Image 1 (cartoon, rainbow, N blue to C red):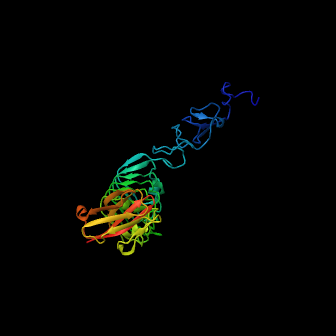
Image 2: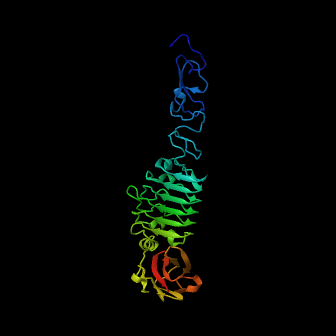
Image 3: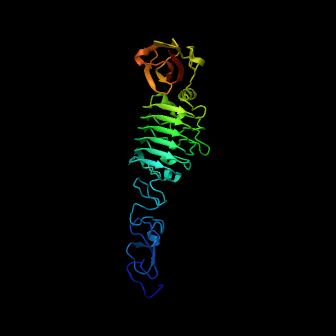
Length: 342
């Protein structure tokens, strides 16, 4: 025996003189570190041997919250690491406008939100990363990105739709906005698209598909950026979306040739009435698309391997005199041609 007297409960081997007890009110096996030293067991306390850990529980009144617990979308720090809802998979909707004026605010935004029912504004030189917005898929309002120190749009990779306007301008702090990488998944902008005064912005290929597919419901204004992203025709010419783009100088009707020897001719070009489009060579399923110089889709026609001639009347589309861009796309790539309308 260690002592011949003093045991306060001879039926419980844990109750003995000078026993150290750790608080575990919620019974999850983790203590918050509160200690009592006495013989009898205090209510809600356990010995170290009865616990997984004697410290670390950040909410001893909730058995689902403790170190190592799965983080779920509930606005709580479930795993006691000091962060809320981190690593969540999204799925919730935030109702209201969201405005970030610091990197800390961006980093504190819950990754549980996939939809914002309101406007999203990202502004100020202190913002350098949008990585925490990775689960954002839809903004049912306007999106404005201005005056930041972002170098690209990484973090918005899952953003597929904006119901209002998308405005990206004057992001020239630090190294300056150089690329729109991160916006490749953006399919729809319901309002206007305006990208301007980003003096280091030379890579807009992330929105080439958005422009060429007619995904912008309003007007497109792209100007006063760096070479390569200074206007819509420049973007469409420089960004091939993974295929081959060939633009013959002057758009004079000469054939443009793919690696697979597909040819396209536009007769007449310039045109004042009807536009005839002749495909020849190795053909396959694809589609013809006519864009204006702001990137809006005006006409679309599916093509197959059996038909070689397509066309339309200028009056049917109400085309004004000016320059247009004709695209033929297939699995093998793309051909862009300039079309002049008189």
